[in-house]
Length: 105
Image (cartoon, rainbow, N blue to C red; front, top):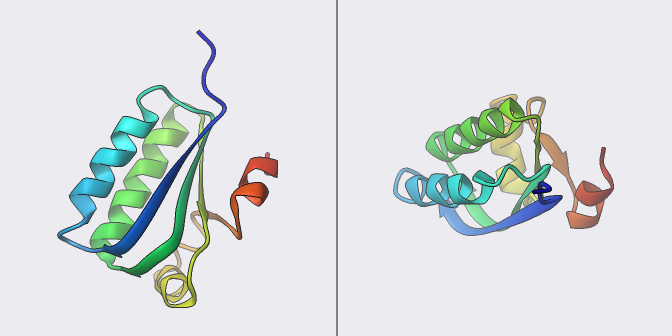
């Protein structure tokens, strides 16, 4: 069975201590079939805290363990600042939109 090329996980609202478990669960379901690219759309996320960052980081590690790639797209300015201040903008592949993520190698 061929691996699916990509999956997109659209998130919205606040990814904090209360919302992070849902995101972790959604990500786990999404990567069960080991898609080559996982694109997390953060364009409708208004807030993310350290627990949200931890869930995304853990997801990226699981995806890279099977040689997949995680892309984050559509970061709003205040969410981008959280990634930059924690220096996680250097760890994640952050792109503007789905087309850029699909075009990425």
